[in-house]
Length: 211
Picture (cartoon, rainbow, N blue to C red):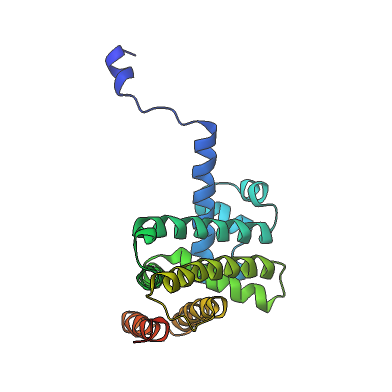
């Protein structure tokens, strides 16, 4: 191989990079299966096959169905953190930050199959009394804490009503998103863009500082 060829040859990926890529592929395959065929369809054999790996690799990485769901939840939270970072919420007034978060979440729900798979998996874990219910409960707690912090920020900067209890209001916002997401799964013909606009208007009126 010439020096010129070596110069332009793609860098060989490290073991950590290869592992990260295979994990992403397995999680994407699991999300697709769950969204398309339901919670029970995401067996290690199907996940490995769809991702282009062996059943053994999926089993080795996640250990159990609960381990797979936990990894999927973590992956979706990382994706949510990436989207939030792009919004620069720290630079927005509290109310605007809440509305921006809700808006980007619902747009992402419409665009990304992995987000829809979260709610299918959640429903499946409830129906089967799976241990994964605790993972979903922890996930919802994280979302509540994020909205609570934004509500408290808005109360300090004057954009959110002071007579609201931040914790319960944050739970209301999360429950609204949960309800909309579930409705869209039950009825895929739901006009999500219109519902999104209605949700933003409702939150602006219910959370905004009293005039």
